[in-house]
Length: 208
Image (tube, rainbow, N blue to C red):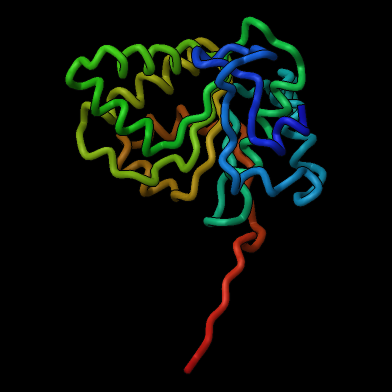
């Protein structure tokens, strides 16, 4: 499975189901294949493994796991590694989706016009056993209808105890101000892992 992760092709078919011979497997963006668990503190992998296997943390079993911190410090890579941890156990009836927040907002927009494909896609997100939302909050939803669909998705998953994994750069006050206040915050927070390290991305400045 880890070798498949490094090649960027995971055993999930178009419908989100675990499928070892999926003809069009879930594709891992290349920039997120560069990190391995060894690049993080050992406690992070332990938390991820326990979470995907339904083990309690300090006596509480959380259905939501949030990776939060500044841009570039590995949250999205860690989210993909957590998805792989979930897939290392063969789960033929499990459905897995990894969705960038911007794509989610665009799909909600398409669904406002009752686009059949978009509505079917949103329905799959509701029912999947694991839904990972990457870069949560990085796009202003712009309309109350999209905010409502987001809350409905998060609330439905929380009520049905389906695993939701979120990577997020945004502070609580931005989420509360733009995504329907405290009630959305209440639905996305479960077990929160704060990333405090420096950016993995290389930067340089030259003064001329």
